[in-house]
Length: 198
Image (cartoon, rainbow, N blue to C red):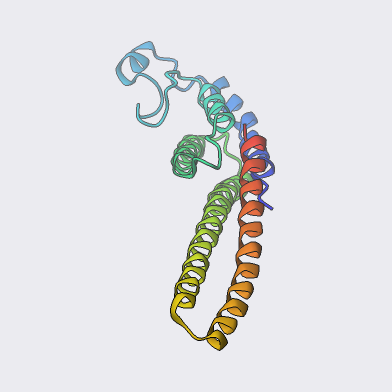
């Protein structure tokens, strides 16, 4: 079962680890020059953040806001785009921290690799769920076609062949029923993920 909500919480916990380093960065007042702010409109390129500030903690807060506002797993393309944007934002913050003395050696690897693994897992989980649903719908369509072909064949065939076709149709209906149950199960998982991710 997809546990998108739990994965998002894990992502938030990984980002939470950057909070202290960002606060230490801000205490150094590395970019307090007003002219710098006026010229650059903040610490990062405008396409990365809406925030315009010289405080790194403000940018981290935007990351948290973006995680909370993640599109539902039902809108998988929008969710993927949002997660990739969040990943770029975290990379930018980490790059800024690495350029200063506040970035401790033991912090360098763990937060970077872990948050990327979580982002990848959320994207993959969503993709796999919708891929499974698509495959089940395709299987359903094929079964319906196979049933229809046999029903059409029954119109002009011998009694013996009609009996064989009836048996085949019964078997196919059984497979179709199981297929539709599988579709319902996947749709319920999607709905559950949708609710938990709001």
